[in-house]
Image (cartoon, rainbow over all chains, first blue to last red; front, side):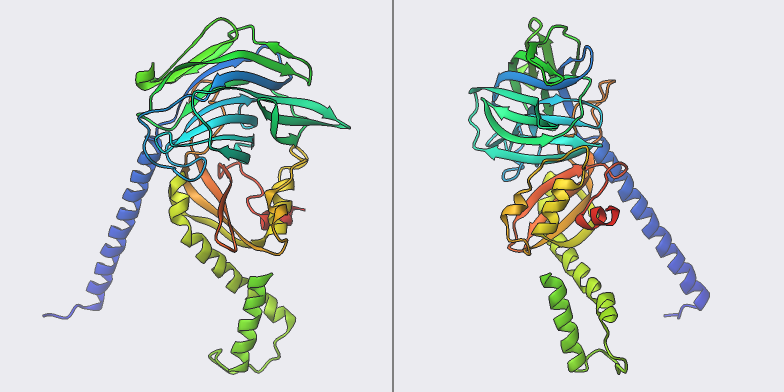
Length: 234
Length: 166
């Protein structure tokens, strides 16, 4: 076999380097494609008239989910979650309280936390949640000394809290799904109430806005009930 | 911290047994320890984060480890409670319940994750998936979710980063 000259060796090295670079670029494109194709849809009702929102209250069941992959079976926020949730605030900053369903709905939990500059910080969670039971989920704020403190409550029991002077331009509730083939039979987020500037809770009144993804469904039942569902559950 | 202590012990042993690959003529000063110890420390944290990549992948898709940082329960608790202050305060970290000097590794992964991203954009578009995931690993191997965010807006990603801003 003929020995390669130095120039030939360098040329082969350059070809190899080129192939490696091409493979890296191709894999990056694939990764980006996969990310871009990830399923992430909502069915949400808004109350956003005025400003100064500091609280939201929702009465709903923890609704069963079917058709979900059996992934994310031991930790919150994993697999292909379906979140029944509610927010005070939007954009990059918010407070959130909800129910997570994962692992073909065999792993369920209540969760609470906040968003800050787009970062989700989990303040806590509670597993062992039973489907089809009705609960009242509330985020509120109240003065504590010179501060104002947000409280996360379920059925009147405080799950977590934080101190913040921020108020927001909206409150929202509904479904957020990362599970493309999940099904959630249409159910109600009922007796919707909001709180402004640490005051009393008042009923939603405006049917102000809504967002419903193509695989989701949602509609208002009067001013104080948002119905949400997904897939064949619609 | 235990890992730093281990590094120092290894270095002393290495010097004592002359296995450093050359003659060490100079006296090992504290500054020399400071220069060498963090390297060993960071390597250990990297190994810990590498070992939990499969768990991190349960949150979505992991591309790489962005930060691997050795810390303690006390440092993590202070960081969790104050990293977003003064806008967010009054938090009590669960790490307060652990021994303050317990070793904790902070692992920040780059990828695409299914963590809650908040409400959709005003135009109805879902927000992009978070691209940074922070998990905390205690000395006894427990892995805990801390947070998830966007690389272009997240601040104070780790206790060391937060300390540097104080």
